Image (cartoon, rainbow, N blue to C red; front, side):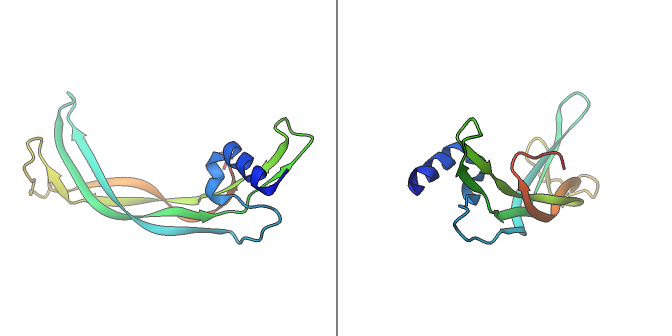
Length: 141
């Protein structure tokens, strides 16, 4: 099988690792790192009857995992697909809880809320503090 055919098969069989695909003949350093990313968060708050009380939003900086991990595909007479796949993906190895304050709050009519108790909202999320390469599909950690 030619290298181009092997690449095509690998791309079809391993969609979750397309960006991280490497051949065993190639040389490629793993480059899995924790990076800062700006996202826009929106949180709506409802009363016990399901009516929206307020919506709050903000642009915040959070961590994300991004990078390449060494993976390979090689022919195999043992596996049913005819290929032995070793796929590694860049994922979080440790999460930390972070409290974020959303500072732009509005009532259901779109009026900006400015009172101290309604003008902002704290939310909690978990973000990665460390990232590393894990075997793809391994969620046992």
